[in-house]
Length: 116
Length: 116
Image 1 (cartoon, rainbow over the protein chains, first blue to last red):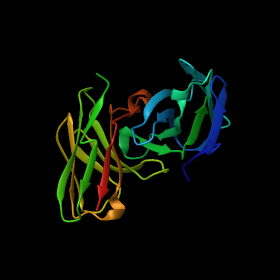
Image 2: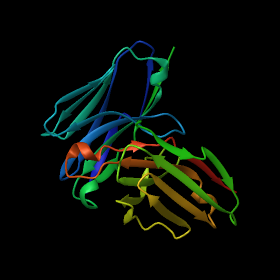
Image 3: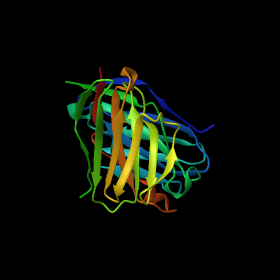
Image 4: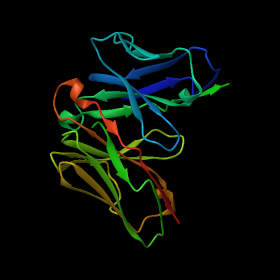
């Protein structure tokens, strides 16, 4: 069964600190893995997208890693800011479903709260 | 322009009303999606259009009727909804193709729907 598991469910950190969010997946065949940031009541915004051949992808203070062998990904946030408070969703694409446009399998997200 | 625009941002409707949600993108994407997201849950796929033709319907009740009048527009017509249909409705678009890069989806900000 295609699944994406994220941990922790929620996380509270102080402003300026670093944190790492985890994503484990069992999706086959694997196409790509994306991390999205979603503010409450808003649409998800893409942070990074990685294919199986990419180990690391950075976007400003966000750095995503991917280990296709162990089917694990992490999202590291450095020097956190209050505006980083949001849900972070790991999404894995399965190319076989529905033809060429693929199927997006969502994790349940990690709710991050950054406190002053 | 990397935006997916959804209107309205908020909608309150009665169970006997007929309303429509609109989604627009000008990125040349030929795949467009409707998702439904309940509070604290990941988005759930409803419909996929590929080249303006409905390619996936995830067993969505007929009170939701999608329409893709052209390659830039996607509508979701609502009729006789139930209170449990209250949710955030997200539109997304992506390119169509077998390259993993082409399956990156861009999301709109969503329409917050309340059925009373």
